Image (cartoon, rainbow, N blue to C red):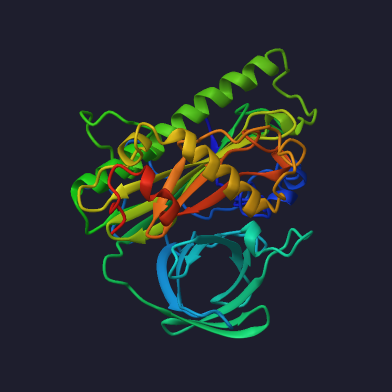
Length: 413
């Protein structure tokens, strides 16, 4: 394989999903930097390196962690559980390297994104759930926190906030590992562009082997239970080699007649990117819900991204598919619940046509969903029901509304 240079964690890191959806379209255009990679955040895995276990190493990536906190928002009637996932410390201080979800007693989850600040152990998080944003605004409340022992202390909406680290009964530990690399399009040619690939995984530990295996299969995009389960380092190496082959082939097609000593600049269209990340959406027995985010840029006006969500039964380790959760006759009634949820989330008044605020006249039933103790969240990708600039649309339906549609009414208890 050709020469590689260390991977630079650029400012664009996670900007596909970690910024408010309304700002997404504009920011994606700025995600493709013309600069070459120049620094290492996480060393790439050695091709074919041996692995004795499904995970890459016992400690995970330095600076990457999954933690759970408990506390109470100022003025809130009950406590909340915060699931905080931080990735390896990026080179750029402005990089969005933190993803979190939180929920109260009703099981309605909300999403936070943010980054560590220049001050050690400090975090700035933004609430990006539409329900938390003021009407007419694309910005949600800010959480300004710093680590203080086993606690996070700071402010929420300017009011004092304290969260204590905890491990609720029934919550699983997760191992977080990040891999990254950059690949030269034209080895040996001057001013060659570089493709960038990143793979971040969160895998449950101390749980039924079937659960770990099924998460690793999902990370490998492998749904066949009979195949051997690959360790993370081999999943990464497979993805990196495939990206390198596709990138070099596309580059060769576009510049097959370029002289070896060309100094002509290359457009950003050849600065391919591929990113994959795993996020914890819910973690309380008997449910573990994960989001598998992917982003791909291979030229054009912008890249494509999506989040595939999966809930697992922590007792059996098996994924809870749409057919395993909902009755065969559930779709018509579920469609009505989804429309009501979309209107509630996006503040579309009853009686106003959906077409206009959205791209569709009727909300389709999606099978891309995950469960919490209090209900289910259904996620629509870009262009599925809304414009690219509006981003992904996720809506929550309470369990009380879903009960008549479930094959097993006590599924989440």
